[in-house]
Structures are given as structure tokens and as C-alpha cells.
Image 1 (tube, rainbow, N blue to C red):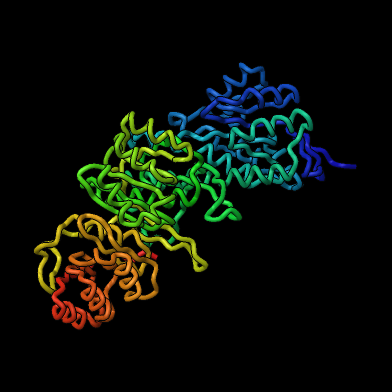
Image 2 (image 1 turned 90 degrees about the horizontal axis):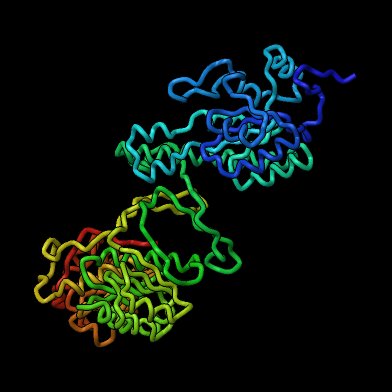
Length: 529
């Protein structure tokens, strides 16, 4: 004969099909509870609840027991302690297939809970709104997270719901079957642990920021990174790869407003970021940055956005086709007319005139975004490798003043700072080995991603052609041999800016002096892999 305890459960009851007889519901946001309440009424489910949630569910016709009646304790310390009691936690954590657990629960008058529904205190919203620390701390949910973890741990017997999107599914199962199957409970448990992990990590990040500590201390033994889904993308770099976009507290908020266009692709987002970074580095100038395949193909400054755009396109008209265009200044009608003369994937600028928007919207396939590159902030960079996650500081590095550089050959007399700045930004954005040549405030020859420095120089010079004469060349890394300087001098390059650090620096410097090329060493390497 099967033994049955006062709890109403048999010792050898089938774990996979436990009925929902008792639910604990504690939610900050009460929206969406109607459907659950309806299923509770239909199946005569007893509900344990707290404060405002109890009032709402009672108003929906549910049989509600206040948690204080279960624990025997009132809500304490301004609501900080409500559900943290063995009578509550034991009801969730007791193992229904354990004779010992059931006997112990029976001895202490603990009735099992089969379903836990929790919506945590809105710490994320309080953090985003900049609530004072004292208010923020009170939005750290302790009891709710404990309920979630307890129910998720005991998924063999208890279902836990932390996502309102799951309310209809759970309500339907209760209504139609009176139970929540094991396979569903398992999925809900995984989601619950993800939710509590995200919540705790977010608290850690925000408190570190408030306490002026590193958000990601590079020497930390452990790091938890909270990621929140923004959107699923059409695909990744290629159509056969799935991809999604997540937000993270690692990225300080940058207000980006999409004014027109299809869903941005994985590659669009990478190109737009590079355009914004380039514009951020040139934010004090009226500049245009054109990106193609996450590489700059044209960067220029001008007296107006129209002039800057025209000069950036002139740097490489073929590559500019189908590119992403970034501006440091508001786009006017004349600039918009120029942009729409050839196909572009996207344009991003701090603002647009009404005339400009009207013209740009005539290109239905063009994505139009409003974002101010001045608002961009440094953030850590993460990369997943077969060895683990690489984490490093990501700092947009502006060009040092020409007068602060160490001029080891000649001097900067005759070098216009705009050209040097443009070449510096291009070399920063290009993949290593990178060389950027600029003249007259625009790039004239770019090359990145070469496995050796001299090839990068040769290709950049070939692209510059006669425009290399009197130009400035910026290298993201040192020159290991004098050959690059000799090639540059033969093509008429007048100025070279490089980080230095080669064991052959003296040979390279002597080659520059012998060829009459002015050279500065910055001590700042700009590698990008």
C-alpha cells in the first residue's frame, strides 16, 4: 500500500507529473497576472503571496494566503525580510521523492509549493534613472532571488517562472493538465538561473561604478558579464551564421536613433561602430569617415560636411560605393544630395536638417541613424578565442600634438595638422600592419592587414600615386628596417609619424635623415588585430 502523508503527497509519487496545488507569487510588476489567476481559479490552486501582489490576486478571485500566515512572522525591517523563512523555503526545497524530506516537512507542518512566480525589484530601471545610492540599494531584491534559486534548484518538483512571456504557457498547462511537465520545468529552471545571474552581475557592475572601482578589473579572479538581448539579427558575418545583438553595462549609453532603414546587419553594426570611432577621434573637426568591410576607405576634413564628404569619396571612389558614412557635424541638404548620388548602406551623423532627411529618405534602402560621436566613451574590449576570453582596455587614442612628438629627423614645419590627424585616425582604424598617407586634409593612400610593414607601405604608396609627394605617412607600428622609409622617400613623402621601438630604430632614423624625410616618434603603437 502506498504511504500518504499529511502533505497530500505519496512517497513514491511520479515526479514527472506533480500537480500544481499551491503556488507562491511575488511580483513587483503586477501586469500579466490575469491569465495565471484565471488558471489558479479553474484548478483551485492556493496562492501564497506578499503585500501588493496578494491584494491584486485576491481581487482577481484567487484563494490567497499571506506569506506572514505561513512563516508566522510579520514583514520585517521595512520589507527587507518577508519570505526568508524555513516554512517558505522548505516548502519549495523539499524533495517530493524523498521519504525523509516528506516526513520532516510533515513533522514541521510544511506544505509543499509546486509553482513559484517572481518578478524582481526593478534594479535595472533604478540604475538607469540614476537613483541615489540609498534608493538604489533598496531596489536590490534578496528574497525574490532566493525564491528563484530555490525553485530552480528543485526543478524536479517545482516550476519557477521569471519571465512574463511564460505566463500564458504556464497558465495553459495548469488549465489543461493541472501540472507542469518535467521538460518544461527544466527549461524554466535554466531561464531562472540566467535571470538571477544577470541580476546579480548587473548589481555588481553598477555598485562598482558608483564606488568608482573598475567595472572589469583585469586582475579579478572572476568576472560575470550581464548581457541583455537587444535583437536577433538576420544572420552573422555570413548568411549561414546565426547572430544576435546584446546590450551590456560595459558600453556606456550612446543614444542612437534609427530614422530609416532595414534591420541593421552584423556587418552594418561593425562598420557603423568604426565610423563612429573615427568621427569621435575627429570630433573637433568638420570631418567625414567612410567605412567599407570595417576598414576606412576615405577620411577627410572640410569647411562643410559637403566638402568633407566629397574629399573622403575622392580618396577611393570605388571602395566608397556601398560603404557606411559617418559625419562629425549635422548633415544639410547639399550634403545629402551628394550622399545619394551613389549607393550607400548607411549614414550616421549628430543630426540632419529637415531638407536632408527628405532627400535621404528618397533612398529607401539607406539606413539613416542619428548619433553624436562626441558622446562615445571608452569601454573594455572582449574577444572569444579557443584559449579563453581576451579582455583589454579599449581606448580611442587621439593624435598627440605635433610639437609634443619627438622629431628625430627634421621638424614639423610645413606639415598641416589636419592631414596628420586624418592619417592618424586612418591608421588607428586599419588592421595591422597599417599605413596611412594623407595630404591636404584627406587620405590619399591606405593599406591595412598586411603581414609585413614594407608591403603595406608599398601598397599605400601605389594607391597614393603622385599625391604622395609632400604627404604625411603614419604607421601603426615601428619600421623594422630602413626599406619602408626608402620607398616612402622615393615617392616623395615629406613626413613620417611612427611609434618607434625597433631594435633598428637608429638605422631607420639615419635613412630618414639621409633622404631628407622629417620623422617623429610618438611612443604610441596603434595595432589592431
